[in-house]
Length: 430
Image (cartoon, rainbow, N blue to C red; front, side, top):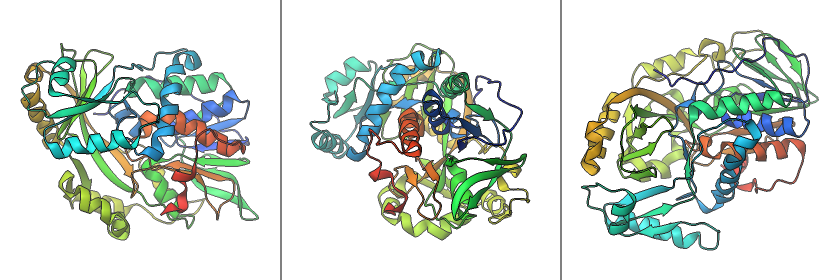
């Protein structure tokens, strides 16, 4: 069962024209719309299902800088600033709390990775620091694990996925944005080779710019227009507990578990060391582009060939504007819960912090992740389709960086010099 999102009253009428159309009502698309609306730019967000119905409400809620690739740190640092401003921008509590994020290591090899990263990011203005076993015991008491050390960034934190996107959506609409749910964008319209609008199941809307923030659906949408986007779907298994007295407010990750305190007093928990990979045709078509990652991470992948493969095959890969699109056939991607992974997560966590043996599981769910070969998003233009900007492929990190990704995307759409260097995120890096 999917997490329950705070409902938002959106528009039932699709406008005939606007300046910017945003395809996708997740946190990145909504953050883009909020930035544009705050700057007085007319913008319409079109969502095939409900806002934040997929990745943006099913993630862990971490907002982190620790262990980010150095080139991705400016985005993460900007996100921290923007999350702290959300109460003023939205008038709502998105659950953002800077309670810290820590990673703990059982082996010297794990610890060396943290030490190497910390050395690499010296001079970046981070408050990250190494932890001794004694400091771990002070920060997260009650552990029976054997830790050789760890790393913590006290200014990192968390926000609530079921609250944040709704708050951002309401704020965007209050500034003039229009959001239309249950309306799939089928195709792009072009004139002279440049994008000039979109065709939806409810009709056409003309515009000057389009932003594609479609998450796991972006690859299929672009392929229909002859554009290759390297993303593959993976599934995370997540659970939440009922309110309980836990060991810390700091979010903690180990090699085979992670947990973070929730605003409701419970904990969100996952098996950090494992992702489920139900094979699809795309895994066969572009899997070799992921070879370095597969070699490095093969122990963390649980691969299966099952009904997902055939369900994916049944969805069209080419369609016209007057034909029903795949996005109308599946309004919300709702992968089944992988109970085995959640059971692993709880066993591993209880072995490390026995206090979680008293936890009562309130809910479990699955969440789809669109992963690029380097686990970095694609944000920027498409050479063969002028006036189209991509903001997709966030590889499981989109919620935490969503507000900053939205600001960067809005800057690119408006032709402004962005505060964040977009070069690491360009489409043609692959």
